[in-house]
Amino acid sequence: MELENLETDLTKMVQEVLDAAKLRPNDLFVLGCSTSEIVGGHIGKASDPKVGERIIHTLRSILKPLGIHLAVQGCEHINRSVVVERSVAEAKGFEIVSVVPAMHAGGACSVAAFEQFDDPVEVEHIVAQAGIDIGDTSIGMHVKFVQVPVRPTQKELGAAHVTALRSRPKYVGGPRANYEPIEHKEFVEQNN
Image (cartoon, rainbow, N blue to C red; front, side):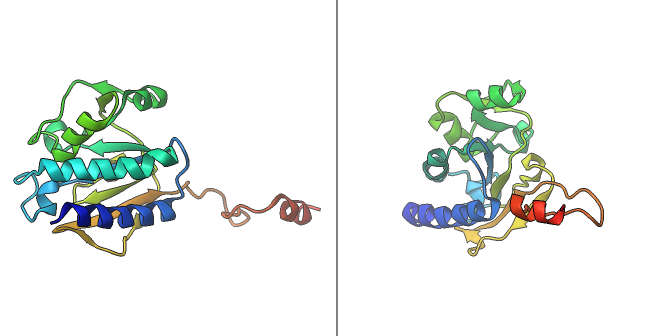
C-alpha cells in the first residue's frame, strides 16, 4: 500500500467518525491498529514501522488542532495498555504503568506514538469518547459506555478491516423523559 493513499484514506475515515461522534476539546480518541493486517499479513506477524509512523502522524495532524487527545492501544502482549501524553494521564486520573512498547509487544503504532508524543506514558485503562479499529484489534474496552458502531464508507485500510465506535450518554427516565435537547423557550412553553 502506498503511504500517501493510506494517509488520504485514513483521513477520510477519521473525519467520518468525528462527524458521527461530535467530539469536543479534551475528549479522547482511541486507535487500535494492526499494521500487519494493513500490509496483508496476519495480526502481530508482519508489523510495519513505516505504516505505524504514518498512521500516528496522520491522526495527530487531524486531532491535535481540534484539541482532541489521541490514545493508542497496544496489543495483547502488553495487556492492551494505551499510550497517551503524560499530561492527559494526569489530568484524567489514569494509572500509569511500567512498560515501553516494542514492535512485537505493543505494535508499530504504539511504538510510533511513543516516539512522536511529547511526553508519552502507558496507562492500563482509559475511557475514550470514540475511536477507530483498524485490523480488528478490539478497542471496545477503551470506549465509554454506551458504545455505538460507526461504519466508515470505506471498509478497509490496505488489507485491514476497519470499524469504529462512538459513545453516547445513557438514556434514563421513563415515558415522560425527553432524549433530545430542547431550547429553553420550548421548555418554558411546555411548563406553563
